[in-house]
Image 1 (cartoon, rainbow, N blue to C red):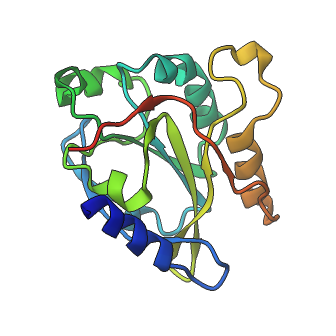
Image 2 (cartoon, rainbow, N blue to C red):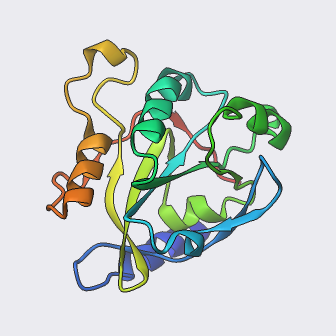
Length: 187
């Protein structure tokens, strides 16, 4: 029932362009213990929220590709990695090690607040946000690209294409692609 209510709230919160509005949240960055919220990035052109894990094989397939995107779009798009997994191995200490070499927030969502706000179900699953009138809207969601297992065989870079279009002020199509990965188990 709780999940249904969250989905209903998300699906009814739309602004002028027809995209769902994402309400702000605050989570702890495992790298420095400081709270991070979307409001910290209201001036960013875009924010990529990545629901990730360090135990899921699919996340490990994408680790280098995500690092490449973070580095390529530094100063243009803000990245936030979120771990909502409940397994003991997905603890804060291990999280800090996994993406320790990236200079972006890696947020612990052990109460699954952000997971509920976004409706995230997979790891990895991405949400590209844009800011309109100070409100965050989903411009693209789902898969990073069309080949989770072999980077060399990727033919469509869904997230990269969406980021490029957002930066250029162009219409993003498609706005969603089915995410492939491990299921994030709810509490």
